[in-house]
Length: 156
Image 1 (cartoon, rainbow, N blue to C red):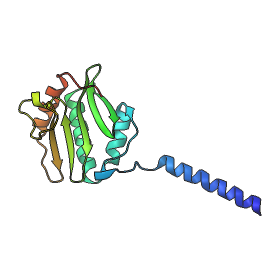
Image 2: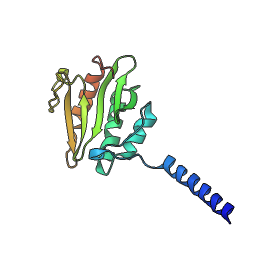
Image 3: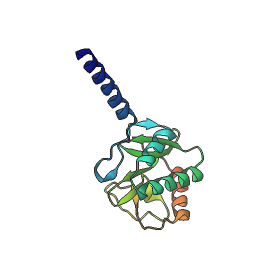
Image 4: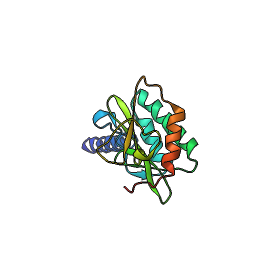
């Protein structure tokens, strides 16, 4: 009987490990998905899929607009944020989830025309905050992405 109990426990441990491996990413403060550092489209898509509620649709839209505006854009997830950049030029844009909005960081945003509305403590960075009921100006966003992709990126 004792041997049978051990087998059941071993099976239970294997099932628990399998569940942990396939579990959804944990959400950090503000609902930001905790995603392992990774390069390429796959980790960015995992991040977007883990964005809570309405923010997931915003993430999908932003990703699609960026890819359409900058064919061949390089992607990564670092510090639990998707980053977009040009090969060998660093990162020009990052996305981060907060409780009430999705923040887009243009790392050289002070050089964009017109300058994105959100100021930063960093001299060159500007932000665009997207709230649940905001109407995204896709033409303006696409123009900023195209401009940002042509500026020197930042190394992270």
